[in-house]
Length: 479
Image 1 (tube, helix red, strand yellow):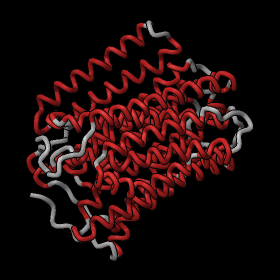
Image 2 (image 1 turned 135 degrees about the vertical axis):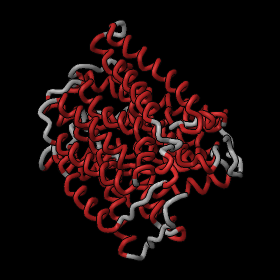
Image 3 (image 1 turned 180 degrees about the vertical axis):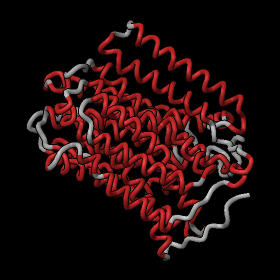
Image 4 (image 1 turned 180 degrees about the horizontal axis):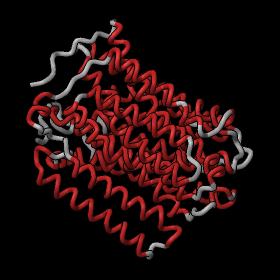
């Protein structure tokens, strides 16, 4: 038994208000995923942060999103999608204010962890209220509008953030979430209908309501991430580094055993991985999004601390990439539907890697139009060939009834890839302490990091060429 049939229409006031709430809410999360990188040099200087502090400022947020986003969706299904969505919005807003008020790195990182937890409640809710609330005839149009306008907020985020940083302070990239959250809460209370999975609420059972799995996932990612970030300062043979690394790996093993034992009530049904295609696509996702996360982390700091650009111009640098994704992704998805995903997922990473190799040549006094734009455009064009075909292929690799959990896991895999890259790359290129403030050390680390990212993309291309094929044209897939 489920909630009553959805009745919202896109032309009604309630439909428009529900869309407004969902778009503003997801816009906050996307904004804080993109704009923080632009702020890293300023907040690092003001808070006297080390490289590890900057890494945790990014990774604390990503860790909570990756570990708990599936649980957040399950909580909404069980206890009410609007209720959990609103809880996530308020939680996110309060954590954002705490981020903006931070007086030291420890405070900021703790607030970013809290912000990521709020995002894990908010992110699945912004889409599920549309899926559950709109009439089937209008659902596709509503989700398409949400996707397009949320993408616009992603494109505008670095520009808005750069302007706020240059004009006011890095703190305002967090404070700006407060009026947005107020608008979301008012719109949601007035227009968003409540819905839930009534069967799960009645029986107290839900396939994805799995606290143990979520906690083990967080422990696994957290342990490995902590070891990678702490290694440059303590050494790879440090007892603290070794213990946290072992705990992280052990948590991965226990997570797999627990999820297998839970069967149909698991957050991540292990039967999904009986599909080789699903498994390969998620490895591909980790590899490609690791390259993306590492690139954006290093580029923002490098352009400001070595090239000498303002925060606003640094924010502008990646806008062409986002615009290409917005405009080109539907066409890439249509191409993949015609010819299969192998070619786009092979060619896309190669083009993106070529863009990174071009960007390695950027130096002090670089011109945006001559030195930066060509590389960013190539990188964006390559990603455009990847994103939509990858999402479609992941969903096509499993049964329709697993579409939600498959999409959620792939989303978590993409965030985990970025998280691990930001944790590992400074160790691999020898950047630690306050090295990001030293032009020579940062320049060497930047070029090394982009070489690693290009290598990851080329590895993804080989993986796609050898192991990825067209998903079967049916909704069966693995059970």
